[in-house]
Image (spheres, helix red, strand yellow):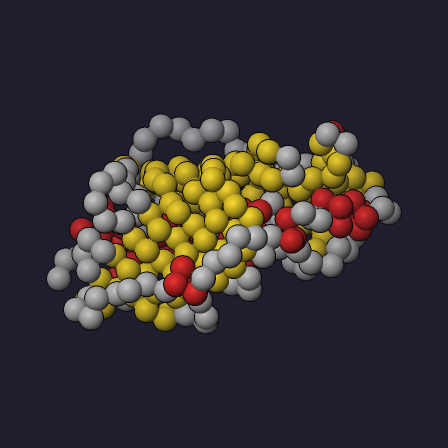
Length: 264
């Protein structure tokens, strides 16, 4: 059975290195004086109108950035379906995938084909955090990638900042809007310790986002989306993994120690 150090090389990315080039400057959320914005609820509903309808989604995710002291880079094939189904498969340049993560019900399964090891019945958010440093499960991933921040909720108070920024409070999070091409769009969201910024769009859909985590799980990741398909049929086989009976078990703690935060 291979140890955690070997797993780190296989699991996390096709290119992981301590140190590396400096990350782009961190985007900043608006601050300073703000004024009440009575029409915030209307602006919020308009901004999430399209992304809230994304009940199923396929996409290729180009991942780059840092988690802990390590640089991460790779491509993943993703599938997402309401309420919280998820599949993430990290490609290798040749041969078998580096990892396959799938969740259809309460627990998720992570399979490492190259080591023939399997982690079963763990929360998807915990596995994602161990892999890339951000604790996000299937429903939140679908919301983030479709452009809805950390999810759609009942809008509460709203406030306007300089530069055309509008902040709307929603159930423990703040969603930031701006008018782009004559319509309100979600351009950022914050739910400590996580924040997300959307930088480019095709129509109403984001094509790139920057996800950051502060505190014990320090991460700064950029995700570029391509081959996006919304509300396409996804069969149950998408969210299942054919794990060989001879696969050796892997614990969540082993995965954490092998991951970028365990190595930092």
